[in-house]
Length: 107
Image 1 (spheres, one colour):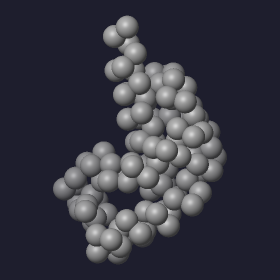
Image 2: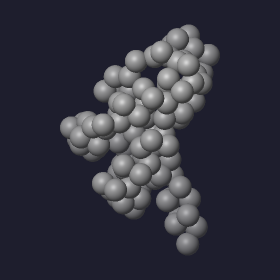
Image 3: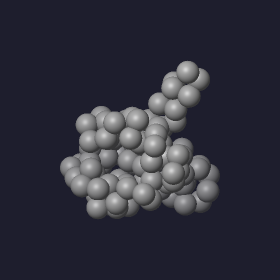
């Protein structure tokens, strides 16, 4: 488990820190958007700033509890903010988009 303190001390990257939460968002994301849609948006803006922030916030509703439980299972007392949830969700969306592009652009 990578803690917020380790991340802020630059012992781990953004992708490593938020990557530990990605599994909590893949299903939520794919229930809302298709991989093809995410790939299109990713090609336009790798940070997904072309999807309204409110959409990300709505997607993250209810995720805080799962993230806190994950932290507790790893004896981590870090809190979770809305921005943490959005960062983890966007990282998950990036992975979905890249996987889709890898699978389809070779055709």
